[in-house]
Image (cartoon, rainbow, N blue to C red):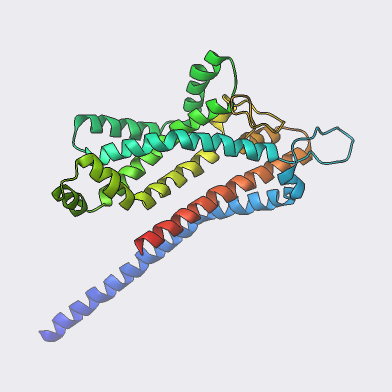
Length: 291
């Protein structure tokens, strides 16, 4: 009797071991398959774009290319500056709105208004970027009769707000309720508790959400196609047409000149490094905070 029970237990144990190994192998295999496209894209962009990188690529602006005449096409300084101004302005517009909305959703989560805001935020986060761009074109560009970097910033801010909002909400919900109760026991009103106790405790996570939103906005092309128009000159006027790295990469791929095609891959490489570096920074900050 004892031997029969022991044999049955041994059989069940071996079966569980083999099932565990099978599931582990499937998990590792699925992860490897999922990483293949990422590795292929990164390696191809690096291989195509690294040849365009040089000092002049970062310090010069566009120079016209003439058929049959040797020479480069300048650099992408105007696009780098344009991207920095457009994304920076979008960040200034989206951060206060996203953080305040996230605070409201976290601190007044059970109200009907919070439910509506949360639903609208989820819908907006899934909104195609070209729809946001066309809407900005109709409401801003057509009414002002002017393409501008500011119109592109507003379109990007609309895409950034839901990311910042939901991240802020999730981070604030992780702050222990005992912290709020301790502040309330000392006589602090709710708004003061949120501003001076809860918000500082979640500041690192909120900054992480802002970085993720910035990374997404920096690589968007569709909204910029119909709002900023593009500009081959270096300009700091955000109220006029500007150039941006995603827009430059898109436009240069259509050109019949190999040097411009190479610069398009160089601009794509800069964007990939920017997005990848931002995500690595977010991971590092998150891990440090968790530790």
